[in-house]
Image (cartoon, rainbow, N blue to C red):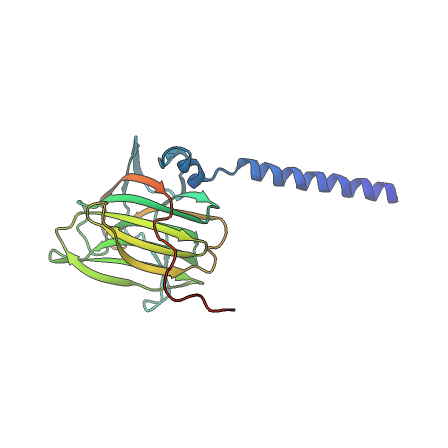
Length: 241
C-alpha cells in the first residue's frame, strides 16, 4: 500500500511538472519579441480579450468597427458596471518598457466614442487612455484607472477637430505612465498611477468602443516597443519603509 501511494504521488508530481513546463514553454513575451526585432510589434502575438464584431488587420494597420453600448467602466459615480469593450493585447513579464501607438478616430461622431491604449488585467483592474468625442466643439482627452473594481476619470478638453493622437504607455514594475502626442515626437504626461495587480505578468494593447447608440471605425498604426522612456525619478529620494 505504501509503494502504491508513493507511486501515485510520483505520477501526480510528474503530471503537474509537465503541465507547468508546457505552460512556461508556450508563453511568448511580446515585449521581448519586439526588442529582438527593432521594436516592431508582432501582430500575431496580440490576443483578443474580447473580439469585436468587425475588425481588419492589413500589415501593421488594425481597424476596429465598434458596436453600440460597448464600454469599460466600474461603479464610481454612475454606479453601473460596463465591461464589454473589445480589447486586443500582448503579454509581457518585462518590468521596464514603453509601448507607442497612433490612433485615428476621424469617424468618431457620437458622445463617448473612443479608442486608445489599454492595460486590461481583469474586469476590476485596468487602465485606459483615449480621446472621447463629446460634440462638434470639443472632446475629452483623458484616462481611466480602475483598481479593485472602482474607476476614476481624469480629463482635459481639446478641440473637436483633433482626429489623430499618439499614446505612449510606460511601465516601471507596478507603476505606470500614460503620455500623449499630436505628432508622435513630443509627448506630454497624462497620468502616473499605481496598479495593485500590475507587478508581475501583464497584458496591454489597444481598445475601441461606443458606450451609447453609435458605431465608428478606429484605426491603429505605428505600434512599437522601445526602452522605457519614462525615466527614473531624480528628485526627492524614496522614504524608507
